[in-house]
Length: 78
Image 1 (cartoon, rainbow, N blue to C red):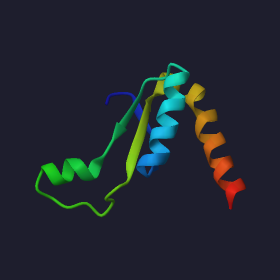
Image 2 (cartoon, rainbow, N blue to C red):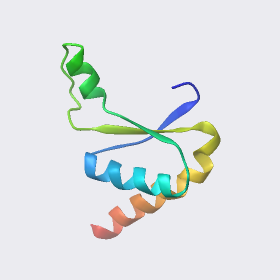
Image 3 (cartoon, rainbow, N blue to C red):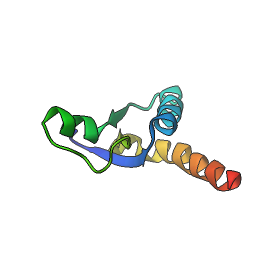
């Protein structure tokens, strides 16, 4: 995960939507489920169900509009 930056955390459905948009822009993102790592290690996690998207620092500027648009849409819904 060298040079990858966590840029967004959320639930599965939101992460899948954002991940797909990043793929459409040819941005290589990584999705991490830290609760699954903890479970496999025999530990619990207080963040069950929360996933994280990481993008390479070289692609961060191209990825920002995806997150900004998603957050804007959330604001408009509420």
